[in-house]
Image (cartoon, rainbow, N blue to C red; front, side, top):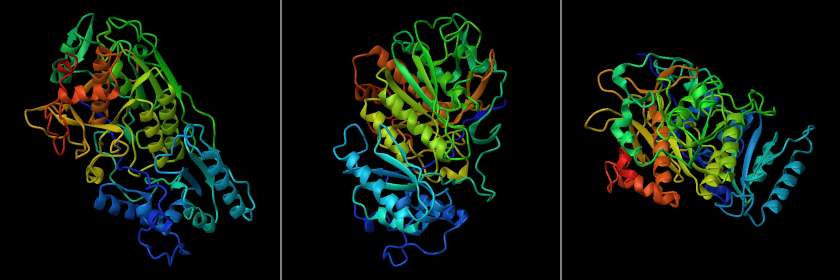
Length: 507
């Protein structure tokens, strides 16, 4: 049986310590500062090798850990684009709440303009409406040196450094992937052993019973709760996620689709390419969480009466490059500003920490959103780093996939580690089949696995709990989910609170 694993080759947590002295923020190898900016810049291979080394040693990678030369080299090899997070202190990321944000921003822009005036080209600034972030092209080492001395800068990062844009025979994806970067448009014949048919004619995936999800439907179906899915968009060709979203036993709910991704290799390009999924991954995740309890003989989602908002924020699950990282940031801030949204699910990430994505996640969290992120799915190349970014953030609930059985074992390509919060059974013993979901194409289904499907499943369970208790806060919902899981109250070192019993969680 062909399986379309949802591959996240993603790792690390990010965001520099804010507002510390320049000497402390970017010490790295050049702690003395004697070779602040060496004449020779590092190659991409050398930069990546250092990223791998630091990730292996610390379990994550922060640009501040690499030192001045590495930072400058990555800026040069990333089209000279720089993201600057500023503020009066580490938590000063919200542009609506900051006291001196405009003053700090104006000062930084003037500093850059003065330093770069001899470059002979226009500087391109991008200012965020919700976050204390500016982005600029800088050509001179002296400009970066001056910025690093500013006390009101929370972080400075290359805005368009591409970790995977180097030919080094790196084994990024396993043989199960039908195409690169988690994308795939395959359909499969679902084995009769992998589903149970329920009224009106929907198929319940085998793993739903491992979490007592069908039993939970006697108490809650997710009605009144809105889930936001940040991913690659939603297929216009799968009618059950569009005109048929209210079909069968699903009714009275809405689906909305947005696009905040610019499909261009040029970072200075503009113009979103729309909400349509052009990868397949986003459609699978939306299906797992919210597919209708249909009468078409196709898989049902966990919260089949919940509302859905999807954002096409990236072209695939590996957030490598300016437009994908910018898209994810925009999706999180937009969902944060949407009062109807209770839950956000994202099964994407990156091997390098990204400050503006972290700011976006923190912004949405500050608005009361319950955020689920994939713990990581990859080959052994990236498994060493444990839980990926942004799942490793304290504001995110990290989820991974485990195999069917009485003992806990991560799926063949799933990450585990101390920052995992929950697990979902998504790989069958014997056949190794994964979870049946709606396919990209109409009237078709497929198998999907990894921590991605585990994350979307958990988001659906959260919707069931919240719909049963609409007056609850995010923390109350999360606490109930923990109390209804395998290892509560003692968290397991690799698998967090373990598998969630959805029926217990809604009782």
